[in-house]
Length: 114
Image 1 (cartoon, rainbow, N blue to C red):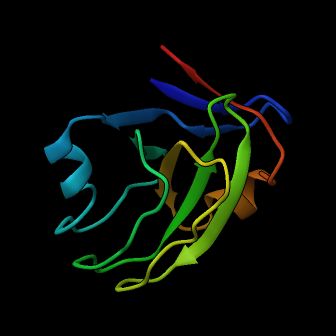
Image 2 (cartoon, helix red, strand yellow):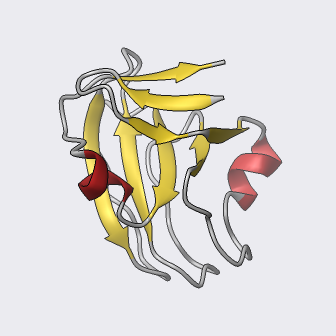
């Protein structure tokens, strides 16, 4: 699956993995060595994340049920808590720099493409 910012036409990830079971949401990216460019982890349902047991920074998009970005964390460092964003239903974890490099902003709409 691909993740695209519909508001500006930029591809955010060419390879999106989905974490939608208790265990896959719990594990997330913990104990992984990296999140390669062009990859993403989509966690649903999920209102907030942490980066404990991670060794690298990530970008995070908080999404409401209408696929709109309601919050973002750029360069969230290891061992930190992410934001709690009102209306967030799910999150996309992305490689560090993805938000800045794609011009993605709160209020933009995103779309998963199969």
